[in-house]
Image 1: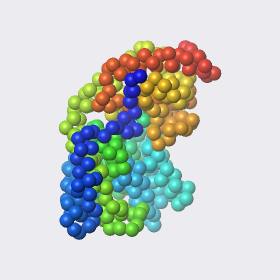
Image 2: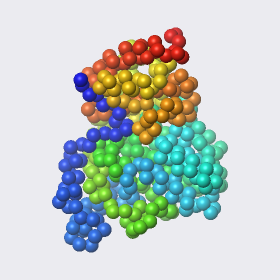
Image 3: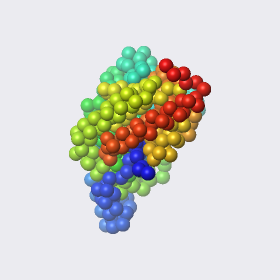
Image 4: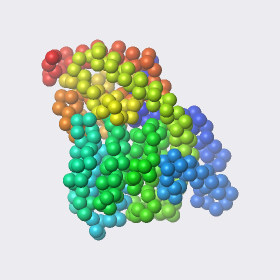
Length: 388
Protein backbone atom coordinates (compact mmCIF):
# COMPACT_ATOMS: atom_id res chain seq x y z
CA UNK A 1 0.00 0.00 0.00
CA UNK A 2 1.30 3.43 -0.93
CA UNK A 3 1.85 5.75 2.01
CA UNK A 4 0.71 9.32 1.29
CA UNK A 5 1.69 12.07 3.69
CA UNK A 6 -0.57 15.13 3.66
CA UNK A 7 0.22 16.52 7.10
CA UNK A 8 3.14 18.83 6.36
CA UNK A 9 1.72 21.57 8.62
CA UNK A 10 2.28 19.19 11.54
CA UNK A 11 5.86 18.43 10.56
CA UNK A 12 8.02 17.78 7.51
CA UNK A 13 10.79 15.28 6.78
CA UNK A 14 14.27 16.69 7.22
CA UNK A 15 15.86 17.67 3.93
CA UNK A 16 18.90 15.44 3.26
CA UNK A 17 21.08 18.53 2.78
CA UNK A 18 19.99 19.80 6.19
CA UNK A 19 20.69 16.44 7.84
CA UNK A 20 24.11 16.28 6.20
CA UNK A 21 25.27 19.68 7.43
CA UNK A 22 23.90 18.99 10.93
CA UNK A 23 25.76 15.69 11.26
CA UNK A 24 29.08 17.50 11.49
CA UNK A 25 27.98 19.18 14.73
CA UNK A 26 26.92 15.93 16.33
CA UNK A 27 30.17 14.09 15.65
CA UNK A 28 33.09 16.33 14.64
CA UNK A 29 32.45 19.88 15.86
CA UNK A 30 30.52 18.79 18.95
CA UNK A 31 31.83 21.42 21.37
CA UNK A 32 29.74 23.47 23.77
CA UNK A 33 29.39 26.95 22.24
CA UNK A 34 29.85 28.53 25.68
CA UNK A 35 33.20 26.85 26.31
CA UNK A 36 36.31 29.01 25.86
CA UNK A 37 38.57 26.35 24.38
CA UNK A 38 39.04 25.54 20.69
CA UNK A 39 36.15 23.08 20.51
CA UNK A 40 33.83 25.65 22.04
CA UNK A 41 35.06 28.45 19.81
CA UNK A 42 34.39 26.41 16.66
CA UNK A 43 30.86 25.66 17.87
CA UNK A 44 30.33 29.33 18.72
CA UNK A 45 31.37 30.40 15.23
CA UNK A 46 28.86 27.96 13.69
CA UNK A 47 26.11 29.19 16.04
CA UNK A 48 26.69 32.85 15.25
CA UNK A 49 26.96 32.19 11.52
CA UNK A 50 23.56 30.48 11.69
CA UNK A 51 22.15 33.43 13.64
CA UNK A 52 23.41 35.85 10.98
CA UNK A 53 21.89 33.77 8.15
CA UNK A 54 18.48 33.58 9.81
CA UNK A 55 18.56 37.26 10.76
CA UNK A 56 19.27 38.19 7.16
CA UNK A 57 16.35 36.04 6.01
CA UNK A 58 13.83 37.90 8.20
CA UNK A 59 15.62 41.28 7.94
CA UNK A 60 16.68 41.85 11.52
CA UNK A 61 19.96 42.30 13.35
CA UNK A 62 21.63 39.10 14.57
CA UNK A 63 21.56 40.50 18.11
CA UNK A 64 17.75 40.59 17.90
CA UNK A 65 17.45 36.83 17.29
CA UNK A 66 17.31 34.33 20.15
CA UNK A 67 17.43 30.56 19.72
CA UNK A 68 14.78 28.45 21.48
CA UNK A 69 13.59 24.85 21.43
CA UNK A 70 10.80 25.63 18.93
CA UNK A 71 7.68 27.63 18.20
CA UNK A 72 5.92 26.77 21.46
CA UNK A 73 8.76 28.06 23.60
CA UNK A 74 9.15 31.15 21.44
CA UNK A 75 5.44 31.93 21.82
CA UNK A 76 5.56 31.38 25.58
CA UNK A 77 8.55 33.67 26.01
CA UNK A 78 6.86 36.36 23.93
CA UNK A 79 3.57 36.22 25.85
CA UNK A 80 4.74 35.47 29.39
CA UNK A 81 8.06 37.31 29.20
CA UNK A 82 6.37 40.51 28.03
CA UNK A 83 3.61 40.42 30.60
CA UNK A 84 5.94 39.59 33.50
CA UNK A 85 8.04 42.60 32.51
CA UNK A 86 5.12 45.03 32.26
CA UNK A 87 2.71 43.71 34.91
CA UNK A 88 3.28 46.60 37.32
CA UNK A 89 2.06 49.12 34.78
CA UNK A 90 -0.31 47.19 32.49
CA UNK A 91 -2.61 44.21 32.93
CA UNK A 92 -4.38 43.62 29.62
CA UNK A 93 -3.52 41.51 26.60
CA UNK A 94 -5.22 40.75 23.29
CA UNK A 95 -4.74 37.55 21.30
CA UNK A 96 -6.32 36.38 18.08
CA UNK A 97 -9.24 33.99 18.54
CA UNK A 98 -7.68 31.47 16.13
CA UNK A 99 -4.20 31.37 17.68
CA UNK A 100 -2.17 28.24 18.26
CA UNK A 101 -2.47 26.83 21.79
CA UNK A 102 1.13 27.92 22.42
CA UNK A 103 -0.29 31.47 22.58
CA UNK A 104 -3.81 30.62 23.81
CA UNK A 105 -2.78 28.71 26.90
CA UNK A 106 -0.18 31.16 28.29
CA UNK A 107 -2.76 33.91 27.79
CA UNK A 108 -5.40 31.87 29.63
CA UNK A 109 -2.90 31.16 32.41
CA UNK A 110 -2.28 34.87 32.88
CA UNK A 111 -6.02 35.53 32.92
CA UNK A 112 -6.90 32.73 35.34
CA UNK A 113 -3.86 32.74 37.65
CA UNK A 114 -2.39 36.23 37.38
CA UNK A 115 -5.63 38.25 37.04
CA UNK A 116 -4.75 39.72 33.66
CA UNK A 117 -7.59 41.04 31.55
CA UNK A 118 -7.81 39.03 28.32
CA UNK A 119 -9.64 39.79 25.10
CA UNK A 120 -9.82 37.60 22.02
CA UNK A 121 -9.68 39.40 18.69
CA UNK A 122 -12.57 38.02 16.64
CA UNK A 123 -12.34 36.77 13.06
CA UNK A 124 -14.76 36.60 10.15
CA UNK A 125 -15.87 33.41 8.36
CA UNK A 126 -12.59 33.30 6.41
CA UNK A 127 -10.51 33.69 9.58
CA UNK A 128 -9.47 37.33 9.16
CA UNK A 129 -9.14 39.83 12.02
CA UNK A 130 -10.12 43.43 11.33
CA UNK A 131 -8.40 46.68 12.22
CA UNK A 132 -11.63 48.15 13.59
CA UNK A 133 -12.05 45.28 16.07
CA UNK A 134 -8.50 45.74 17.32
CA UNK A 135 -9.02 49.50 17.70
CA UNK A 136 -12.10 48.77 19.78
CA UNK A 137 -10.30 46.39 22.15
CA UNK A 138 -6.95 48.10 22.63
CA UNK A 139 -6.49 50.46 25.58
CA UNK A 140 -3.82 52.20 27.65
CA UNK A 141 -3.75 49.09 29.88
CA UNK A 142 -2.82 46.77 26.98
CA UNK A 143 0.71 45.35 27.19
CA UNK A 144 0.67 43.00 24.22
CA UNK A 145 -1.23 42.02 21.09
CA UNK A 146 -0.45 38.60 19.60
CA UNK A 147 -1.88 37.54 16.22
CA UNK A 148 -0.69 34.60 14.13
CA UNK A 149 0.74 35.37 10.69
CA UNK A 150 -0.60 32.30 8.85
CA UNK A 151 -3.06 30.02 10.58
CA UNK A 152 -1.90 26.46 11.13
CA UNK A 153 -5.33 24.93 10.39
CA UNK A 154 -6.65 27.02 7.50
CA UNK A 155 -3.53 28.76 6.16
CA UNK A 156 -5.28 32.14 6.24
CA UNK A 157 -2.69 34.95 6.11
CA UNK A 158 -3.46 37.90 8.37
CA UNK A 159 -2.72 41.53 7.50
CA UNK A 160 -0.11 41.72 10.24
CA UNK A 161 1.33 45.01 9.00
CA UNK A 162 -1.96 46.88 9.54
CA UNK A 163 -2.63 45.26 12.91
CA UNK A 164 0.92 45.98 14.11
CA UNK A 165 0.60 49.62 13.05
CA UNK A 166 -2.46 49.98 15.26
CA UNK A 167 -0.64 48.43 18.22
CA UNK A 168 2.41 50.61 17.63
CA UNK A 169 0.29 53.76 17.43
CA UNK A 170 -0.96 52.95 20.95
CA UNK A 171 2.57 52.13 22.15
CA UNK A 172 1.56 48.49 22.61
CA UNK A 173 3.90 45.60 21.79
CA UNK A 174 2.95 43.28 18.92
CA UNK A 175 3.95 39.63 18.55
CA UNK A 176 3.22 37.29 15.67
CA UNK A 177 3.56 33.52 15.46
CA UNK A 178 5.11 32.98 12.01
CA UNK A 179 5.76 29.25 12.42
CA UNK A 180 3.51 28.34 9.46
CA UNK A 181 4.50 31.24 7.22
CA UNK A 182 8.29 31.32 7.56
CA UNK A 183 9.99 29.84 4.50
CA UNK A 184 6.69 29.61 2.60
CA UNK A 185 5.97 33.29 2.00
CA UNK A 186 8.13 36.38 2.43
CA UNK A 187 8.59 37.33 6.09
CA UNK A 188 10.27 40.66 6.83
CA UNK A 189 10.04 41.88 10.42
CA UNK A 190 10.69 45.50 9.47
CA UNK A 191 8.04 45.48 6.77
CA UNK A 192 5.55 43.78 9.08
CA UNK A 193 6.37 46.24 11.87
CA UNK A 194 6.30 43.61 14.62
CA UNK A 195 8.15 43.74 17.93
CA UNK A 196 8.46 39.96 18.26
CA UNK A 197 8.17 37.03 15.86
CA UNK A 198 8.28 33.27 16.50
CA UNK A 199 9.63 30.71 14.03
CA UNK A 200 10.86 27.14 13.97
CA UNK A 201 12.54 24.61 11.70
CA UNK A 202 10.46 21.44 11.48
CA UNK A 203 7.68 22.91 9.33
CA UNK A 204 10.20 23.74 6.59
CA UNK A 205 12.16 20.47 6.25
CA UNK A 206 14.44 21.28 9.16
CA UNK A 207 14.95 19.46 12.49
CA UNK A 208 12.57 19.31 15.43
CA UNK A 209 13.64 20.91 18.70
CA UNK A 210 14.95 24.22 17.35
CA UNK A 211 13.27 27.57 16.86
CA UNK A 212 13.95 31.24 17.30
CA UNK A 213 12.34 34.39 18.61
CA UNK A 214 12.95 37.79 17.09
CA UNK A 215 12.83 40.49 19.78
CA UNK A 216 13.19 44.03 18.49
CA UNK A 217 16.02 45.94 20.07
CA UNK A 218 14.75 47.91 23.06
CA UNK A 219 11.91 45.51 23.92
CA UNK A 220 12.20 44.26 27.49
CA UNK A 221 11.48 40.59 28.17
CA UNK A 222 11.59 38.83 31.53
CA UNK A 223 13.23 35.39 31.24
CA UNK A 224 11.18 32.29 31.96
CA UNK A 225 14.22 30.16 32.89
CA UNK A 226 17.31 30.81 34.98
CA UNK A 227 20.65 29.10 35.24
CA UNK A 228 23.00 30.51 32.61
CA UNK A 229 24.03 33.50 30.54
CA UNK A 230 23.22 31.91 27.17
CA UNK A 231 21.24 34.00 24.66
CA UNK A 232 21.87 37.11 26.78
CA UNK A 233 20.13 35.45 29.73
CA UNK A 234 16.81 35.56 27.89
CA UNK A 235 16.93 31.84 27.15
CA UNK A 236 19.55 30.06 29.26
CA UNK A 237 20.61 26.53 28.41
CA UNK A 238 23.33 24.90 26.32
CA UNK A 239 22.85 26.03 22.75
CA UNK A 240 21.62 23.54 20.18
CA UNK A 241 24.34 24.22 17.63
CA UNK A 242 23.40 21.42 15.23
CA UNK A 243 19.76 22.53 15.37
CA UNK A 244 20.63 26.18 14.71
CA UNK A 245 22.78 25.21 11.74
CA UNK A 246 19.95 23.00 10.47
CA UNK A 247 17.40 25.81 10.82
CA UNK A 248 19.64 28.20 8.90
CA UNK A 249 20.20 25.69 6.10
CA UNK A 250 16.48 24.83 5.91
CA UNK A 251 15.64 28.52 5.55
CA UNK A 252 18.33 28.96 2.91
CA UNK A 253 16.86 26.11 0.86
CA UNK A 254 13.33 27.42 1.39
CA UNK A 255 14.32 30.87 0.13
CA UNK A 256 15.85 29.35 -3.00
CA UNK A 257 12.75 27.23 -3.66
CA UNK A 258 10.04 29.59 -2.47
CA UNK A 259 8.78 30.75 -5.85
CA UNK A 260 8.70 27.29 -7.44
CA UNK A 261 7.23 25.65 -4.32
CA UNK A 262 4.53 28.32 -4.08
CA UNK A 263 3.54 27.83 -7.71
CA UNK A 264 3.53 24.04 -7.55
CA UNK A 265 1.61 23.81 -4.27
CA UNK A 266 -0.93 26.43 -5.34
CA UNK A 267 -1.70 24.44 -8.49
CA UNK A 268 -1.89 21.14 -6.62
CA UNK A 269 -4.13 22.59 -3.90
CA UNK A 270 -6.54 24.10 -6.43
CA UNK A 271 -6.61 20.82 -8.35
CA UNK A 272 -7.40 18.89 -5.18
CA UNK A 273 -10.11 21.30 -3.98
CA UNK A 274 -11.86 21.27 -7.35
CA UNK A 275 -11.64 17.48 -7.63
CA UNK A 276 -13.13 16.91 -4.16
CA UNK A 277 -15.83 19.50 -4.79
CA UNK A 278 -16.90 17.82 -8.03
CA UNK A 279 -16.83 14.30 -6.57
CA UNK A 280 -18.39 14.74 -3.12
CA UNK A 281 -21.51 16.67 -2.08
CA UNK A 282 -21.81 18.90 0.98
CA UNK A 283 -18.16 19.84 1.34
CA UNK A 284 -17.28 23.30 2.70
CA UNK A 285 -13.92 25.00 2.21
CA UNK A 286 -12.58 26.60 5.37
CA UNK A 287 -10.50 29.77 5.22
CA UNK A 288 -9.54 32.05 2.35
CA UNK A 289 -8.98 30.64 -1.13
CA UNK A 290 -6.90 33.67 -2.11
CA UNK A 291 -4.95 34.76 0.98
CA UNK A 292 -3.51 31.59 2.46
CA UNK A 293 -0.29 29.63 2.45
CA UNK A 294 -0.95 27.49 -0.63
CA UNK A 295 -0.24 24.02 0.75
CA UNK A 296 -3.03 24.20 3.34
CA UNK A 297 -6.44 22.83 2.33
CA UNK A 298 -9.06 22.64 5.08
CA UNK A 299 -12.34 20.98 4.09
CA UNK A 300 -15.45 20.21 6.14
CA UNK A 301 -17.32 17.05 5.26
CA UNK A 302 -20.76 17.88 6.60
CA UNK A 303 -22.39 15.42 8.96
CA UNK A 304 -19.33 13.33 9.90
CA UNK A 305 -16.88 13.34 12.82
CA UNK A 306 -13.42 14.30 11.58
CA UNK A 307 -11.73 11.60 13.64
CA UNK A 308 -13.73 8.92 11.81
CA UNK A 309 -12.50 10.25 8.48
CA UNK A 310 -8.90 10.35 9.71
CA UNK A 311 -8.95 6.77 10.95
CA UNK A 312 -10.55 5.52 7.74
CA UNK A 313 -8.00 7.32 5.56
CA UNK A 314 -5.15 6.09 7.72
CA UNK A 315 -6.20 2.52 6.96
CA UNK A 316 -5.80 3.44 3.28
CA UNK A 317 -2.27 4.75 3.87
CA UNK A 318 -3.25 8.44 3.88
CA UNK A 319 -2.04 10.75 6.64
CA UNK A 320 -3.84 14.04 7.26
CA UNK A 321 -5.19 15.92 10.29
CA UNK A 322 -8.32 17.30 11.90
CA UNK A 323 -6.45 20.37 13.16
CA UNK A 324 -3.32 21.09 15.14
CA UNK A 325 -1.21 18.06 16.00
CA UNK A 326 -0.89 19.54 19.49
CA UNK A 327 -4.59 18.91 20.16
CA UNK A 328 -5.07 15.57 18.40
CA UNK A 329 -7.42 13.23 20.20
CA UNK A 330 -9.90 15.92 21.16
CA UNK A 331 -13.50 15.21 20.18
CA UNK A 332 -14.51 18.85 20.43
CA UNK A 333 -14.64 20.99 17.28
CA UNK A 334 -11.48 22.97 16.59
CA UNK A 335 -11.48 26.36 18.32
CA UNK A 336 -10.41 27.80 14.96
CA UNK A 337 -13.57 26.52 13.26
CA UNK A 338 -15.70 27.72 16.19
CA UNK A 339 -14.14 31.19 16.11
CA UNK A 340 -14.87 31.40 12.37
CA UNK A 341 -18.54 30.81 13.13
CA UNK A 342 -18.76 27.39 11.51
CA UNK A 343 -21.89 25.39 12.43
CA UNK A 344 -21.06 22.39 14.62
CA UNK A 345 -22.12 19.98 11.87
CA UNK A 346 -19.40 21.50 9.66
CA UNK A 347 -16.79 22.18 12.33
CA UNK A 348 -16.71 18.58 13.55
CA UNK A 349 -16.09 17.31 10.03
CA UNK A 350 -13.12 19.58 9.29
CA UNK A 351 -10.03 17.89 7.83
CA UNK A 352 -6.72 19.58 7.07
CA UNK A 353 -4.78 18.30 4.08
CA UNK A 354 -1.36 19.98 4.06
CA UNK A 355 0.68 19.35 0.94
CA UNK A 356 4.44 19.29 0.57
CA UNK A 357 7.33 19.13 -1.88
CA UNK A 358 6.82 15.39 -2.46
CA UNK A 359 3.06 15.65 -3.17
CA UNK A 360 1.96 14.62 -6.68
CA UNK A 361 -1.23 14.72 -8.74
CA UNK A 362 -1.27 10.92 -8.69
CA UNK A 363 -1.30 10.93 -4.90
CA UNK A 364 -4.14 13.45 -4.77
CA UNK A 365 -6.15 11.38 -7.24
CA UNK A 366 -5.68 8.38 -4.96
CA UNK A 367 -6.85 10.39 -1.94
CA UNK A 368 -10.04 11.48 -3.72
CA UNK A 369 -10.59 7.91 -4.92
CA UNK A 370 -10.51 6.71 -1.30
CA UNK A 371 -12.42 9.69 0.06
CA UNK A 372 -15.53 9.06 -2.04
CA UNK A 373 -16.51 5.66 -0.54
CA UNK A 374 -15.24 6.71 2.91
CA UNK A 375 -17.51 9.75 3.10
CA UNK A 376 -20.44 7.81 1.62
CA UNK A 377 -20.06 5.01 4.18
CA UNK A 378 -19.66 7.32 7.18
CA UNK A 379 -22.61 9.47 6.16
CA UNK A 380 -24.78 6.39 5.86
CA UNK A 381 -24.01 5.73 9.54
CA UNK A 382 -24.39 9.33 10.69
CA UNK A 383 -27.46 10.20 12.78
CA UNK A 384 -27.16 13.90 11.87
CA UNK A 385 -26.49 13.92 8.15
CA UNK A 386 -29.39 14.66 5.87
CA UNK A 387 -28.71 14.44 2.16
CA UNK A 388 -29.61 17.68 0.38
